[in-house]
Amino acid sequence: MPSLFSRIIARGIPAYIVAEDEQHIAFLDINPNALGHTLCVPKKEVDKLFDLSVSDYQDLMMFSRSVAAALKQVVYCKRIALSVIGLEVPHVHVHLIPINNMTDATFKKKISPSKEEMETLTQQINAAFKQ
Image (tube, rainbow, N blue to C red; front, side):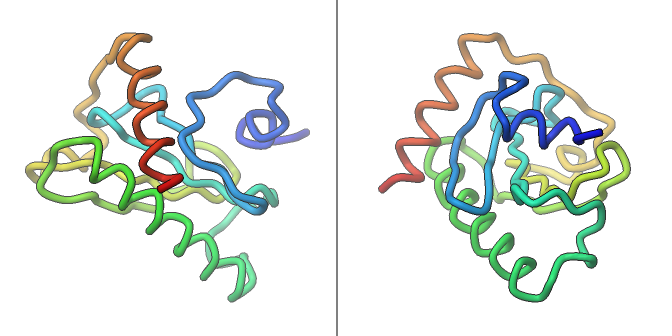
């Protein structure tokens, strides 16, 4: 059965897609730690980060770097944190989390942005990514 993220990639489930290339997709986390919390996902369904080939791993990190740069242009924060945990969905994904302090990256603190905030962020990040 395809993972939740494979279903998003196939457009079977809606998502706030902020960036995409031939091999990857990035979308806003619907249960974010902070405004702009984004997931970067390879389109190839692989469960664990270190099961990716070296080139696929490097490509995912470069894509994530580009998305983080766009995110930093749009969301005020001290840093963009990167985390790879991978227990909640069996499909490799990189969390990019705008942070101002350590508690922003703990996965215990959650926020509930409105649909309008999510749509505006999606458009802004996407525009910054395409620059």
